[in-house]
Figure 1 (tube, rainbow, N blue to C red):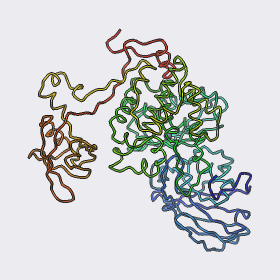
Figure 2 (spheres, rainbow, N blue to C red; figure 1 turned 45 degrees about the horizontal axis):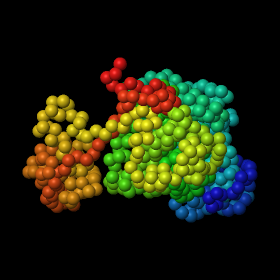
Figure 3 (cartoon, protein in one colour; figure 1 turned 180 degrees about the horizontal axis):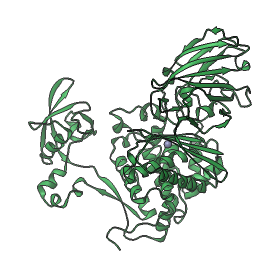
Figure 4 (cartoon, protein in one colour; figure 1 turned 60 degrees about the vertical axis):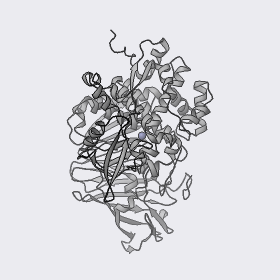
Length: 604
Ligand SMILES: [Zn+2]
């Protein structure tokens, strides 16, 4: 239990919040915090969280909170002392009082507040103060003065327009969506589901809702029920937006309204929905000890995000395939792209999954140009390691069990409670019959290359490595001059068409020549290069084993570098079915995806 927290069975009189709009187009709201006498009989400290669970970055929400004022029960102004960036000391108020503050809400993400004339998305961490040592006190929230016709959606239960949270943790974990959203409701067993959709889009809303229902059914079937009585999906469409944040009884989702103009847009959205929904079990309930109860004032690092996020990022695919909301062909492309990224990224030699998890706060959430060379993603590599674990469990069970059984075993054992690294190893031992430590040392605490052979053996799939010159159109592949161009490699990486270097692969020809991030390439072999494409084409003019002269700008000075062009060592991955498969492999694939293993291309 973090410092400053009291044990359960704490105080009973609730803190009541009233939230009002101040100026919607200017993104301002006002919050009144009604403090009961028993909470403020002694001087108390009010604090705002610095971060929100599920998004592991100190965001200093207090920078959007001002105009703090306090009145006692007689309506007299009382002084409030600011103690640090996010804490205020209140005087003793034996008969209670009201603390009022303004919030500026102009950041449309799933982890920040956004309010305008169309809707309001309020995040608990960024909106509601708590009294230190009294986080177990219950809270109530009312909304007053909002436009006619606006509704409220949230995972919290309501009584006559008042939303009830049993403690501050529950309040923080329950975002509110206000507005004129379209509300879809259904029940599954005894559980009530609500899907609030804000904003226009080009897609088929019924398809979104029906697909979500099937994902819910598959998840419920996996566990034989749900660990909550009600659940709310809060989806907002806004151009360029994307993201999701998990909560115990709800999820906030953002999507681009134009992403649904092609099938992949639906597959992506359903995968996001499946991911966040599965978090109701993995991380919101079954969790590392650092992930609740939380210390909201500072970082709460854990080494287990690879399990909470990586496993969820793998299980999401089984869910969407079994719910028939995305096909294997698309999932195979996604997994192949992730495999390619993780087997070509220089950072895979540098950072383990445990380190990536632990440093999420200062590295994953604060990426720099150095990140691909020094880090891995606990989401992406975590999902591939979960796939390898699934394969190991399949091989030990004739294809009949996988990581969903692994997760179910942990759920049965720990449920809404803490899980440790030792528990994860023990469950692996039970389902595979193998010593888990070598696997952990290679792939979780170590930096060994991923093992594709275990996937091939388990499911009858092949991870084919492809060189850049093997994907050329036939006429180019058959012409030695064009094929030679595809073999050239410098190690320079650009973003889009900007000719400023975005990354230089460590040990590559460009790195050896002294080129680096942030330098702008002006010319290659005397030819002016206006775009990143120009740079690539002019380097391809040079044969492997020959040098290209590059002029680049480094802090205002032009420098000359000789890049010795090498043969491209990078290989992409494609996933294809093996020509011949055993019955266990077919069973494994069917059990994982809910679909039969496809026949190899070119076969009837
Ligand atoms: Zn997640």
